[in-house]
Image (tube, rainbow, N blue to C red; front, side):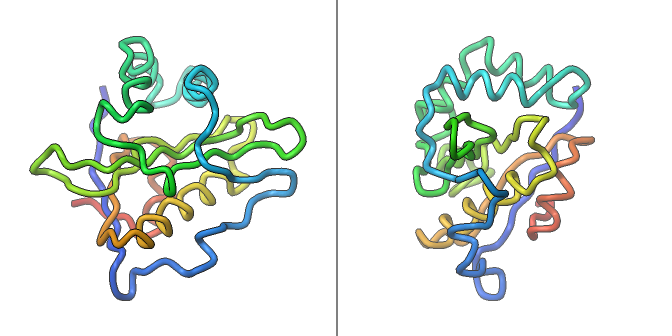
Length: 173
């Protein structure tokens, strides 16, 4: 299984996000709202976001199969889900969920304490449109607004999302 890199972004001083990140721009016909879809819909989304050939497919399917994804959503796996930082992107007309960002407050480890991006994913047919970027901006801005000094995440080696994280100031720690 590929290794993961732990990354963090400061939320202090010059690293404060711009105000427009609180309500980031999204493609026409898409809106970002709080994470409100049912666990079944979010589980289906998690599965679809990791198709055959995706570097995290095995990990995601195992995460779903052993019940860890449901425990993450319930706040039992890592820590409570931060409602203001988590969200879902959905189509205006149909309400179909296109992507999600799950941010938790992680305190149970010497490695990390504070907001942690547990998952950001976008349906493959909708990737490359700025939806993942909008979910990440929203998460960063919301964590800064609650006074967090940094935000962290893990990214698997070979995952194309690493370039997005680096573009937004995340660096290995």
